[in-house]
Amino acid sequence: MYVQFCWIHALLLLQSFLVQSLPITRPELPTSQHCCPIARNLLWSKTVQGLDSSASRLIARLLRYRFLLPELQLRDGLEHLGTGIRLRSFVSDLVKASRPLKIGVVGGSISWGEGAGTHGKTDWFSVFMNWLASAAPGEVSGRNGCVPGTTSNYMLLCLDHSVDPDVDLVFVECSSRDGFVDKLILNSIVGGYEQLLRRLLELPGRPAVVLVHVPYLRPTSFSPFPITSEDVQGALAAYYDLPAVSLRNALYPLNVHDPTRDFLWNQTFADTHPGDAGHKTLADLAVHLLQETALGLVHYPVSEGEALQRDEPLPPPMYEGNFPPPTPSCLRGPNLLDLMVSAEGWTWANEGSKTRPRWGFVATTPGSNLFLRLDIRDLQAAEGGTKAVSTVPVLLQYFKSYKTMMGSILLRCEGGCSCPKQTLDGWHEERVSQTSMDLIRTSRVDNATTCDLSLTVLEETRTAGHKFKISGVVVGVGYELSGAYDHKYWRIPEGTL
Image 1: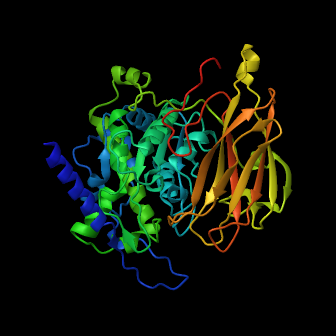
Image 2: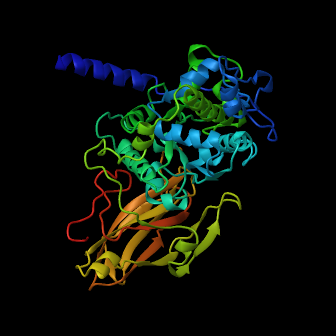
Image 3: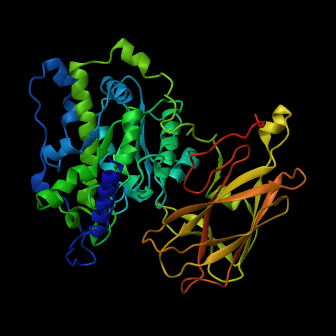
């Protein structure tokens, strides 16, 4: 039996290796032409039979939406529904207009709106919110808290910058940027993702949380169906009873099983990001989920027992002991600038736009030196009279890319702390550009309250350039950080509470 399993596993790995990618042929387009216009001749609306007049009046406005995805693909894209207790509560409040509602989305560049022709209008979250604002009888507001080039681990640490604590519904779109680890049990990507979901589910507003999965495409190829993290992350949807939608499930059959015009990858994705048509199909899935939830409420309204169950405590983590960290100090934007003591050869620059800012410290010349001063006071120890912990973990957030201008830095701790010297490289082979995080284990010197980081651009480089960018710092006074990508072992050290 074991030998048979090994052979099967080996054959699956070989098959995965042999079909690592499938080609995408893209037509040449004028620079002014968007790759992925919406085929408006295909738009359609639902017709629902069997509703009485009172039910029709209650949800008729929610059904005023024109879909691009065919009906069967809408169904295919609902990856997991479960009981939907929190989402049913949200939609019940929505149709009754019982109170103002807040909707949020967290993730990376896709849900921020990259690839859409008009950001704030044709990206999927804007399409969804425009529909919801027109369909809801009461007040609704949306907040796009996505940060391009980041993973779920970034959002776990810096969630306070992206979500209101009293939010009522949150979409989580991270699977495409999180990457893929070919491991079913104790998968590091699932571990960090679980901690993010627990932080969201435990927000004061007790929000409904919906998982949004988008396939990872390269400009000229795409991966086979199982090469994604959404399937292993799907275990969390089942464990925490969370709805999930999948653009892979909806579009893959229209590209591979039965190639269908207007839904091919080169007609829905601009590169690694959806174009207008791709964003529209993603909005279709979110709208369809809420519509189907509303229709379910017509037949099965929220009962008293269900309402009580909504606020029950979360179950233990799916991965044993995998609790999220206490809220860390995530310093970005102006808060990061305030840490600067001196900067020689470094500039404070926005490499994005006014609507999509990407602030950070940037240097391009060897020898450029930056000093940042961190507050490492242990306030819990000071208030409780306990001894301050000697180790203060720090996560340095920096830009990492495959582009040929990236360089490296030497990091040292000075002033009130010490740490091993570290070399951080801003270049990697993987063809993505994103925020990376490296762990710095600093130790206090003589109960110091501050720690100085010295960052020097090195002459040595693996590319033709020396560019390096610091985009944020996370200071974790009072607990340990397990590493840059695997947050399975966050914990509060004994004696610090």
